[in-house]
Length: 171
Image (cartoon, rainbow, N blue to C red):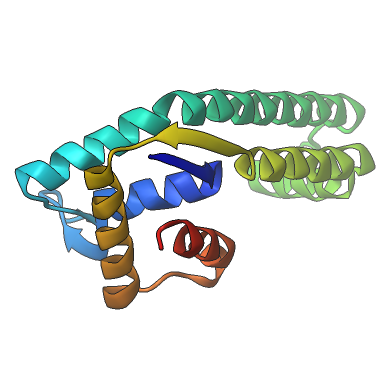
């Protein structure tokens, strides 16, 4: 069966299939997302879902990484320009100078516009819809764990659009 979802919904469902939504403590004492434990058949269906979406998700992630890299390069260039124009005074601490630098960067119109443009591009990329093929068994596993996650843990406000999309698709 063919399924059509946005990249952000694909990623949300991947998280639902991979984690319970609860937290646990790892060996080092760090709090981590609790991995979802499935029986062999369910685990096989999870792998099928991930494999069916992996190529398209990877393409979009590469585009997002390129946007982020371009943004980091711009920030670094503007940071270096500011350092040349306004070098650190001998009386300034490194911390104070960094604060001043960050304040100046946050006021920079070029950077503000670049951030807005980058965020818009990333948002649009995450809305990209992909179509992929899954078996009936895989679809049932997707449906089961999406419902279970919603019933037990619930979704955050930020996930509302994806939850609505997934609810409609997984009927």
